[in-house]
Length: 527
Picture 1 (cartoon, rainbow, N blue to C red):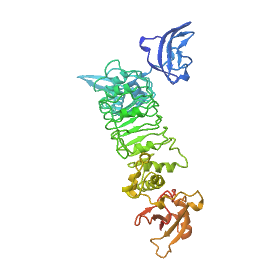
Picture 2: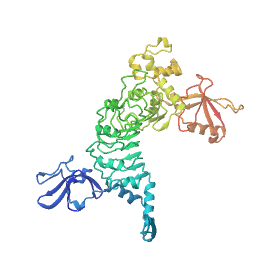
Picture 3: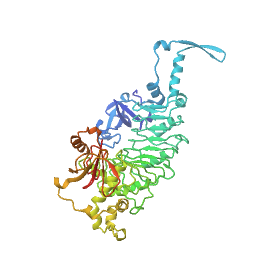
Picture 4: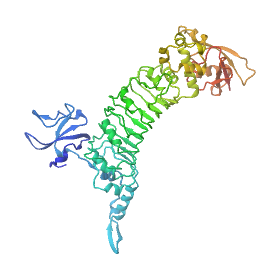
């Protein structure tokens, strides 16, 4: 840019040596002659001061080292949308191609042209574009009115992240020319809101809007949503958003909402979005949440909140109480949960136990941390849960005879699914609830009968095996005993408590205890 300044530079987004900033001042800074731009950097470590020089405040910054003074000719104010597309997507012809002459007829008059084929080829390339990625291409404006609509009428997906767009007015000028626009990514742009009302129909076809790291507020989100009557996915990561009001007549079609890394969001704010009718996926990673409650639903009941929510992501939060997962069981449609890297779910030697407890706590869950919950894993988790808290259940007034059950309110709050598990599998028997002996090898051995259903000549064997022994090691021992390759062995087991039900031991890395194998069970070996 030249050293000549125009009045409209204030608020413009600029790029200097790869760093982005916003112009906050334009003018003279004595005693040095000539025009200067005062800019506030996106990265405050790039600056030198807070907008002051020798005691005079020329502009203000949010960070004490966020500002700098720069000569206008060092600043890139960006390019227009259509030029950026041509720079990235038009295949340039060689010199010989450009010099070709062709005779065309305009009306009744023949006209000699140069480079006509090249021009037609460029127009054809642009008109076929449906997906455009212009990330970090210094796009600052729409360009000549109507130019985008004429050159690129079929664009459906646009990535304009990390550009120099400074206002929604420019975004609207671009989008208004893209009538088929379905996906728009405006992340990492700092956008001022329009001076007037939005253009009717501007985003009528938009389904996906990405506004990560834009500094947008919740009120502005709702204002945007009014332009997008068919919006299905909305991404709002890292904006310091506070959900301040309930959406009314907006966001009603949204199926996915990403609020990750908005640290000011709390449990009470979530109630304001709890009645979005079509919300199926809610991403709340790294928001600092530690608890959630659905006060409209009692123990064993379903909440009216989040009626369509199927997938919840709460990674990287502060979840440390099991009551969090008990409450999630109240969500009527929840089928998938991701809860990695929380105090209660950190990857350690007890990670498998934690997974089993979560599965037992949320009855309708089908996927946990992107791993499918198979029926046998659910059965094992629920049986182990029933057994692990059996003594507590009994002390709280539990009884094998349902008519004599007098469970305390405290136990029901802590274990809301326990009664259901008793109905599903039967109440735990007294012999199951014997106090766990100290951790010694002799107390961890399981006495098992080993049978060979397909080998009638093999005698039934009784053997003591550690409950912690993996299926892989059991197969290794049997391979040496029977002189049969490990790869040929198929294992399952039966319990005398459930005759006729055979449980396959398919995961070689899991232990006998994982499958709830107990004393006096029968190990079935086939090959």
